[in-house]
Every structure is written in C-alpha cells, then in structure tokens.
Image (tube, rainbow, N blue to C red):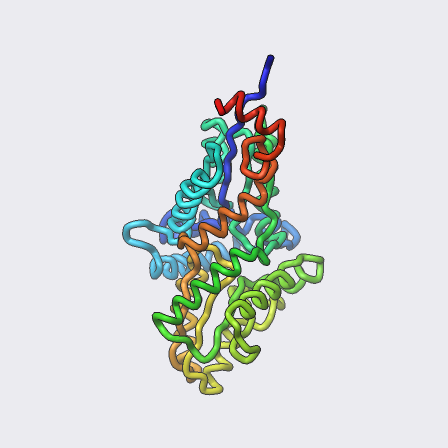
Length: 355
C-alpha cells in the first residue's frame, strides 16, 4: 500500500530591503529596483522614468547614503537585514519546538539581497514543498504586501515543480502581536520613564492610494487603538501619526514631522515615539525618528524625544509570530498539532512517523 511522503513545510519572512552598503552607488542600485516597482510608484511609466532617472537617482543616493552611515552596524551591517535574519533564526527554533515536524524558516528582502528568488531556491533545495510566505508588514498595503505576492508569482512562473504557497495578508489586529508591543513599551517605560505623550508612527502612503481602496489607513488606526487600549492610555496621552512622505502630493495625515514641530512649539517637554508598523528597526526608525525627529522636536522648542525600539527578535515578538504561523499552517499537513485528533491523521502519523 502506498502512503504519501511526509512533506516539509517552509516559512519565508520577507521584509522591504536595504542597500548592500552605505555608499551612494549601492543606494542608487537599491533605489532603482525599489522605485521601479509599479506597486510602489503608481505614475505613468514614461513620466516616472524621467523623474526617477533624471532627478531622484541623481540627487537622492548621496543623501540617503549619509543617513545609512549613521545607523549602519559595525559588526552586522544593515540593521533591517540583521534583525530580520535574527527573527528568522529564532522563529525556526521556536516553530520546530512547537510543531512535530521539520519546519524550515528563511528570510528574504523584496528589494536587494538576499532576494526572494534565492530564498525560494534554498528552501526548495531543502525539500520544502509547502511554503508559507510572511510579509513583515502587519498592516496590508498594495504598495508593500501585494508587491511581495506579485514577485512570488513571477518566481513561481519560472519553476517547473512549484511548491504549494500560502500568504499571510496582514496581522494588524493579531492579539499576541498587540500584547507583545504593549509589554515591550511598558518595560521601556519602567526603565527609561514615560513621556508626556506617546506618538504611534506608521509609514506614510499617498492619500490617493486610500482613495483607490487600499485598507492601510484603517488597519493602522485599528492597530493604534488596540495598542493604546492595551496600555490603558487616555485619548490625550497618545496620537496616531504618519512618517516618511515623499514628493509634493498629499500623504496620510497627521504628519509626524509637523506634529513634532507643533508639540515643540506648544512647550511639550517629552515625547515617546513607537512604530507599530515596523517589525524591525531600519533607516526610517533609527535615523528618521531617533535622529531627525529629536532634532526637529528640539529646534521647535521641545525637550527630549525618546524612540522606543521595534520588537526586532525579542522573545515576545517571536512568540507572537509562532502563534501567527501556527494559525496559518493549521490543517496543512496531517501531522500538524491541530490535526492530531483526526483518525486519518493519526493513521498517517503511525505509518510515516513510526508511532
């Protein structure tokens, strides 16, 4: 009698990406790939090609390289890549402790290296035939998560023997994720003290994206409210803001920089900033907020800005990711925990697993 082989499951963490090194040349190559994505910039191709190649890639790489140098890690390089790698390694260990199966966890960047294509190739070489893709964006946007799905489709289109693939679309209201953030913020306050106001800062998005149906703003608002409620904050103790806008068009408001300038002008002495949409620390948190944000706040008359680091590979974050993966892996393979009660699953486990 023939029994199916015991299938191997893979989990792929995908984050945005980073230049290989903090130089103008490396940043230019990274930005060219990033800003050429039709999901990221939804302008007519001919018009954007002129702007990108005639202005952006001429002016921005040198300035961005200087910013990257401020946050580059001497031993580990890019903070984003380092923290994502640490998350993947911790998740691999934790998932294999929880699930009675050989689960392989790897990581990739949507832009730059390590590429998604190289990660998929590595996973398939290790025998993975069921793949769960986890974009490290808690809140869904067509500019981020959908781009990962698009790229995975292109990768699969070139494969003869494709793995079965699932995607985690978002986890903006995932209870363990909210609880992990709240615990992390409370611990930070216990050590460093709590400021007058907590700003919950999310990456910005052009308002026209929301007008076209992108659910991003609504999901950010839900995440912020759930986190504020978990922290037992009154409405006047926190505020939702958006950062990292680019160009002259209207982006999601209120803007972080304008909010810091206003608060400084009003004489606010201290402010905390935490970013619930960033799974890992990166340029936008370590340089834009912790450095530029402090300068803007101080120059406007404010006092001390305290940036609360991202969850990165902290234990509670990894535990939340384990629970998230378990939820999406449920029923995928007869030997996963939530299938143990199924008679066919028990028979399969006895025959294949030697029970």
